[in-house]
Length: 183
Image 1 (cartoon, rainbow, N blue to C red):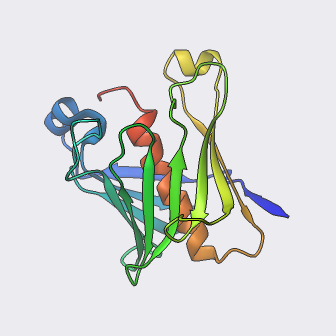
Image 2: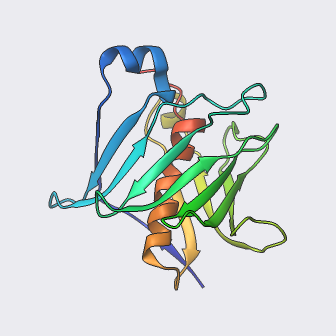
Protein backbone atom coordinates (compact mmCIF):
# COMPACT_ATOMS: atom_id res chain seq x y z
CA UNK A 1 0.00 0.00 0.00
CA UNK A 2 2.79 2.45 0.85
CA UNK A 3 5.98 2.89 -1.05
CA UNK A 4 9.20 3.77 0.70
CA UNK A 5 11.41 6.28 -1.10
CA UNK A 6 14.99 5.22 -0.56
CA UNK A 7 17.57 7.49 -2.10
CA UNK A 8 20.88 5.74 -2.15
CA UNK A 9 23.17 8.28 -3.79
CA UNK A 10 22.44 11.97 -3.72
CA UNK A 11 25.04 14.66 -3.65
CA UNK A 12 24.13 17.91 -1.92
CA UNK A 13 26.22 20.98 -2.53
CA UNK A 14 25.42 23.92 -0.28
CA UNK A 15 26.55 27.33 -1.44
CA UNK A 16 26.03 31.02 -0.81
CA UNK A 17 27.04 30.80 2.85
CA UNK A 18 30.31 32.28 4.03
CA UNK A 19 32.19 31.43 7.22
CA UNK A 20 30.83 34.43 9.12
CA UNK A 21 27.21 33.55 8.25
CA UNK A 22 27.72 29.93 9.31
CA UNK A 23 29.26 30.96 12.64
CA UNK A 24 26.73 33.64 13.61
CA UNK A 25 23.53 32.22 12.14
CA UNK A 26 24.24 28.50 12.65
CA UNK A 27 21.45 26.24 11.41
CA UNK A 28 19.21 29.27 10.71
CA UNK A 29 21.61 30.43 7.99
CA UNK A 30 20.38 30.91 4.44
CA UNK A 31 21.56 28.40 1.85
CA UNK A 32 20.98 27.02 -1.58
CA UNK A 33 21.51 23.28 -1.90
CA UNK A 34 21.87 21.69 -5.31
CA UNK A 35 21.01 17.99 -5.32
CA UNK A 36 22.36 15.80 -8.09
CA UNK A 37 22.35 12.10 -8.84
CA UNK A 38 25.52 9.99 -8.79
CA UNK A 39 26.15 10.91 -12.45
CA UNK A 40 26.20 14.62 -11.62
CA UNK A 41 22.83 15.37 -13.24
CA UNK A 42 20.93 18.12 -11.41
CA UNK A 43 17.72 16.86 -9.79
CA UNK A 44 16.54 19.72 -7.59
CA UNK A 45 17.52 22.87 -5.75
CA UNK A 46 16.51 23.68 -2.19
CA UNK A 47 16.60 27.41 -1.49
CA UNK A 48 16.21 28.61 2.09
CA UNK A 49 16.45 32.31 2.99
CA UNK A 50 17.54 33.48 6.43
CA UNK A 51 14.72 33.08 8.93
CA UNK A 52 14.35 33.05 12.72
CA UNK A 53 14.46 29.70 14.51
CA UNK A 54 10.99 28.91 15.84
CA UNK A 55 10.20 29.06 19.54
CA UNK A 56 7.34 30.07 21.78
CA UNK A 57 8.40 33.72 21.37
CA UNK A 58 8.82 33.87 17.59
CA UNK A 59 5.52 34.03 15.75
CA UNK A 60 6.63 35.80 12.59
CA UNK A 61 9.22 35.38 9.85
CA UNK A 62 9.41 31.62 10.41
CA UNK A 63 11.37 29.08 8.38
CA UNK A 64 10.56 28.41 4.74
CA UNK A 65 12.19 26.71 1.79
CA UNK A 66 11.57 26.86 -1.96
CA UNK A 67 11.81 23.61 -3.93
CA UNK A 68 12.90 23.71 -7.57
CA UNK A 69 12.89 20.62 -9.76
CA UNK A 70 14.49 20.69 -12.20
CA UNK A 71 16.63 23.55 -10.89
CA UNK A 72 15.10 26.86 -11.91
CA UNK A 73 11.51 25.55 -12.05
CA UNK A 74 9.65 26.22 -8.79
CA UNK A 75 7.57 23.22 -7.71
CA UNK A 76 6.52 24.57 -4.34
CA UNK A 77 7.35 26.05 -0.96
CA UNK A 78 7.42 24.68 2.57
CA UNK A 79 6.49 27.16 5.32
CA UNK A 80 6.73 26.66 9.05
CA UNK A 81 3.54 27.42 10.98
CA UNK A 82 3.84 28.89 14.47
CA UNK A 83 2.51 26.68 17.26
CA UNK A 84 3.28 26.59 20.97
CA UNK A 85 4.15 22.91 21.21
CA UNK A 86 4.34 20.89 18.02
CA UNK A 87 6.34 21.32 14.82
CA UNK A 88 3.96 22.18 11.97
CA UNK A 89 4.49 22.96 8.29
CA UNK A 90 2.33 23.79 5.29
CA UNK A 91 3.52 22.54 1.92
CA UNK A 92 2.42 24.62 -1.06
CA UNK A 93 2.54 23.67 -4.74
CA UNK A 94 3.68 25.98 -7.57
CA UNK A 95 0.18 27.53 -7.68
CA UNK A 96 0.48 28.43 -3.96
CA UNK A 97 -2.20 25.93 -2.93
CA UNK A 98 -1.73 23.92 0.27
CA UNK A 99 -1.11 20.30 -0.72
CA UNK A 100 0.15 18.93 2.61
CA UNK A 101 0.21 19.77 6.29
CA UNK A 102 3.02 18.17 8.28
CA UNK A 103 2.60 17.86 12.05
CA UNK A 104 5.33 16.55 14.33
CA UNK A 105 5.19 15.15 17.82
CA UNK A 106 5.24 17.41 20.85
CA UNK A 107 8.56 15.98 22.00
CA UNK A 108 10.89 15.71 19.02
CA UNK A 109 14.06 15.44 21.14
CA UNK A 110 13.55 11.77 21.95
CA UNK A 111 16.39 9.53 22.91
CA UNK A 112 16.57 5.92 21.72
CA UNK A 113 13.41 6.08 19.61
CA UNK A 114 12.18 7.29 16.23
CA UNK A 115 10.42 10.64 15.76
CA UNK A 116 7.28 10.67 13.62
CA UNK A 117 5.93 13.52 11.49
CA UNK A 118 2.37 12.98 10.23
CA UNK A 119 1.49 14.20 6.72
CA UNK A 120 -2.10 15.19 5.98
CA UNK A 121 -3.68 16.20 2.67
CA UNK A 122 -4.40 19.92 2.20
CA UNK A 123 -4.86 22.03 5.31
CA UNK A 124 -4.98 18.93 7.48
CA UNK A 125 -8.35 19.86 8.98
CA UNK A 126 -10.43 16.71 9.51
CA UNK A 127 -8.41 14.71 6.99
CA UNK A 128 -6.79 11.34 7.28
CA UNK A 129 -3.03 10.91 7.47
CA UNK A 130 -1.82 10.06 3.96
CA UNK A 131 1.86 9.43 4.66
CA UNK A 132 4.61 10.03 7.19
CA UNK A 133 8.17 11.23 7.62
CA UNK A 134 10.17 9.28 10.20
CA UNK A 135 13.48 10.41 11.70
CA UNK A 136 15.23 7.25 12.88
CA UNK A 137 17.24 7.07 16.09
CA UNK A 138 20.89 6.71 15.11
CA UNK A 139 22.36 5.20 18.27
CA UNK A 140 25.91 6.23 19.16
CA UNK A 141 26.27 8.02 15.85
CA UNK A 142 23.42 10.29 16.98
CA UNK A 143 25.16 11.17 20.23
CA UNK A 144 28.46 12.05 18.53
CA UNK A 145 26.98 14.22 15.77
CA UNK A 146 26.75 11.86 12.81
CA UNK A 147 24.31 11.89 9.92
CA UNK A 148 20.56 11.67 10.42
CA UNK A 149 18.41 8.99 8.76
CA UNK A 150 14.88 9.69 7.53
CA UNK A 151 12.24 7.57 5.83
CA UNK A 152 9.38 9.03 3.83
CA UNK A 153 6.45 6.63 3.56
CA UNK A 154 3.96 7.60 0.86
CA UNK A 155 1.28 5.98 -1.30
CA UNK A 156 2.62 4.28 -4.44
CA UNK A 157 0.36 6.34 -6.68
CA UNK A 158 1.47 9.75 -5.34
CA UNK A 159 2.56 12.25 -8.01
CA UNK A 160 6.36 12.49 -8.33
CA UNK A 161 6.39 16.27 -7.78
CA UNK A 162 4.52 15.83 -4.51
CA UNK A 163 7.20 13.32 -3.50
CA UNK A 164 9.81 15.97 -4.37
CA UNK A 165 8.02 18.46 -2.09
CA UNK A 166 8.03 15.97 0.79
CA UNK A 167 11.72 15.27 0.16
CA UNK A 168 12.46 19.01 0.44
CA UNK A 169 10.28 19.30 3.55
CA UNK A 170 12.38 16.56 5.15
CA UNK A 171 15.52 18.67 4.72
CA UNK A 172 13.83 21.67 6.34
CA UNK A 173 12.63 19.52 9.25
CA UNK A 174 16.15 18.13 9.66
CA UNK A 175 17.75 21.58 9.74
CA UNK A 176 15.15 23.01 12.12
CA UNK A 177 15.02 20.22 14.70
CA UNK A 178 17.96 17.85 14.41
CA UNK A 179 21.01 19.87 13.33
CA UNK A 180 22.60 21.26 16.45
CA UNK A 181 26.10 22.01 15.16
CA UNK A 182 26.45 25.75 14.54
CA UNK A 183 28.98 25.40 11.72
